[in-house]
View 1 (cartoon, helix red, strand yellow):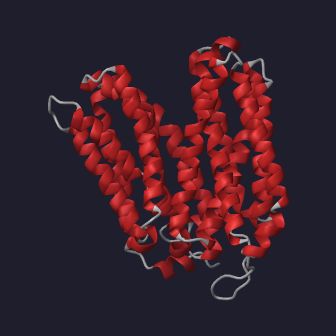
View 2 (tube, rainbow, N blue to C red):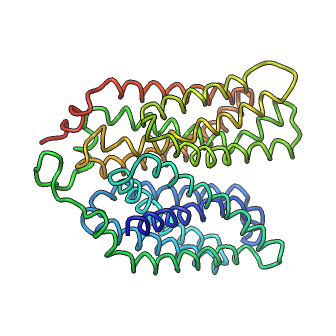
Amino acid sequence: MYSLLLAIIYIAFISLGLPDSLVGAGWPVMHQDLGVPIAFAGIITMIIAGGTILSSLASERITRRFGVGLVTAVSVGMTAAALVGFSVSDSFWMLCLWAIPYGLGAGAVDAALNNYVALHYAARHMNWLHACWGLGASISPFIMSFALTQDLGWSSAYLIIGVVQAVLTFGLLLSIPLWKKVNPLTTADESGKHATHVPLAQALRIRGVWLILTAFFAYCALESTAILWASTYLVTDRGVDAATAAAFASLFLLGVTAGRFLAGFFADRVGDRWMIRRGFLTVGLGIVLLLLPVQTTVLALAGLVIAGLGCAPIYPAIIHSTPVNFGRRNSQAIIGVQMAAAYTGSTLAPPLFGALSAGTGMWIFPLFLAALMLLGLLMSERLNRLDPGATADAAAP
């Protein structure tokens, strides 16, 4: 049963990643069919991000009330309904409407599954879990490409993935008893006290929480900025042709995914703290290669791939270390806030860099990434100096 539940969790995270690349992959056609400016894609993603942040913040109360299995099934069902809704939408306002349940479902399942794996599984599984998300995010553009090249229309891609999500929802509903049998949730914390709801304000008062939230914000801001702007930087400032730049920009995301698969093989031996530290330092090495003022573009391209590999273990290690840093009783509440910080960083940083580069030039791209890398490394190292026992008990009323 242990292996079966783990397989279900992996599949759920592949499913979580599937819709994430659809809007970007299909928007060049979608905005024309809907008769809206191309910039309106930002409205859709902002609505999704807003719903995700709200459900992440509420995840502790919801998960404690209904259990991880039911929350996961319902959340995936909400995204399935939203994707089917996207497929039948013939106006922009309908997309905005369906983006609401999509965001709410994605945030709840993300926080619930991350906490469940952090509590009950080894670090290697957390890395492989997030590699599964990258696998799902990499598959969906091919589904959109297939739908468009076969003249099926962009709506067919949403329908295909919506049906996949609906089938998964049915399977998750059947698996609810399995979650309770394999890893029954305890009602007590480490000290034996009754585990009650941890309010948001109380979670934020725990010593060290703001350090990890800042580190998580910085990491996700760095990752999303690199994904969106790396290709443009390579073309405008390093003289790389557009086709090569696009290929290496995609390799950044593939590097993150492949790096997480590889990290899983030694994450248990190395430990979460070293994974975070080495990840940020490897990102720093990649940024240095991007910055080197040399004529060849080989170092810049290699730097982008190295930065992607460095990013790979940071997100899983931060999540997996949460119960150790702040206590099992507090982990669901704090992981929910961490998810909110992550989505806030990934939502705000790319447009912020776009506005900044419009005034300074695209040459500032590596410096922007370097600032985020240093911020994340500094905050995570400051957290490492705190006593884990003190942070775990700091929220006691």
